[in-house]
Length: 622
Ligand SMILES: [Zn+2]
View 1 (cartoon, rainbow, N blue to C red):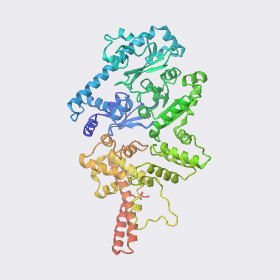
View 2: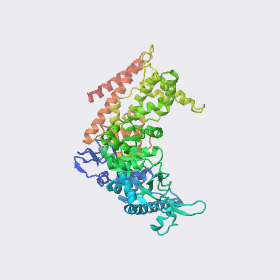
View 3: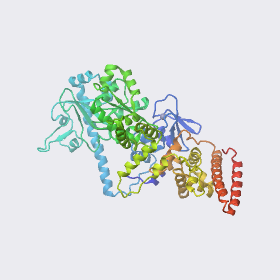
């Protein structure tokens, strides 16, 4: 379902982020803002700030920030549509669905109803399984034998599905109710249409979504029968490619510990919780997917994958690496823990103790090292052929990394391993990428050129010739200054009313992504007037300038609170300095032109006079 931008804007201008956050986090007024204990990381003194003027929350401890919609998504684990829905109901708006055909609307409503009923059905079965556990000494003994206490069994809602083919017939009034088969509790024989319980004589692990609703089960045999583990099938409420076992139960512990520990099975999760590691979750018999990673990263910036040390564990780790690489931003930490081959996490902690396991976690292999190892796998780095092979493997691992310091460092490291200059390695990769494209495609070298640091070519010098306009344009204002101008305008869009045409041209003429962002802000201002940052934030979703705006509004210097008059002066000062710089460049140009064009000297004098006047207004020009 797509929700119109205009509605999101209206919604955000009506809700109050202080009230929304205040439902979950006790807040205290502190100056212009409200402060509280950050719900995203464990802390004893408040560094979590909510700004009513910006309609924005920000934690100075962990850096999490966002608007009311973002808060509900991050903290309450809601999806975007759910969060919008929730807020809309609070302020008495209804999410527009005019663009949806009535038939589709009905279908969507029916599907939602069906999902809710499936969850209820599963919950009812889960309650019975819990009751059955209390009545089965055998199952209780099994869990005790695995070291699971009654308290942990209760927290994870563990149960027992008794022996017998049709136990659930005693729980549900109608055993042939399609809800039982749709929810995966009952299997309908393909040939004879006979119905029977999927889970029999198994310890039952209810699988909950982030809202705490039961969406399926995992069942483990008590003895050595096969299969050892059995999961619910894919249903309208259960998708194993995106669900993580234990995430609902582990949410708080993940925030307190500062990281999530991803294991291979639900017994690991329960056993680790018992041993004091309550921040563990598990994939459900599948490889780790990009969806799993995205979901986890809503709760923490730090993920440690734990794998058994055998070949299967290594393969699973490699899949997790592939899924994690596109998310490995500089502010995140992804690590890989390989246990000795005879151990799973549970047996390891029992054999070596909790502190040895903690040390192992602290020493886990960073994504960067695993990536380099994976690139060099089965390559003999002692030979040029082996190094070339490694370089070829590395391209596919390196390219999906998000741009940032990690990516650049890894380029250097991989180049050193390949015994190539980083620029040469990139060139080799570009050619390989081009070979992979249809021959008609024009060579897209621009992106790569932009990445290259400008190098003075020997013999040619570095002075721009009089015709080199591109070299001139590259003389952009220092990044910090332009960032700050963007920050001031994003948080006080009304300042645009005092800017001249020249100011606007200066701003939108900046190098991308700054220039396009300023042009965008100006266009928004003309169309809709001054908008608060929270609304701009939403409008920017998916826009090419989103990352820049997000960075300047959430970085270390993101605070622009203060006297509005002073902030206006600050912006004016910035613009004057930028204009002065631009004038200086134009002066040099005019002087060069004066050799052949007598009018140029006149122009030079005018430019210089203007710049000197500006610099007098802003004496701190560097
Ligand atoms: Zn925090």
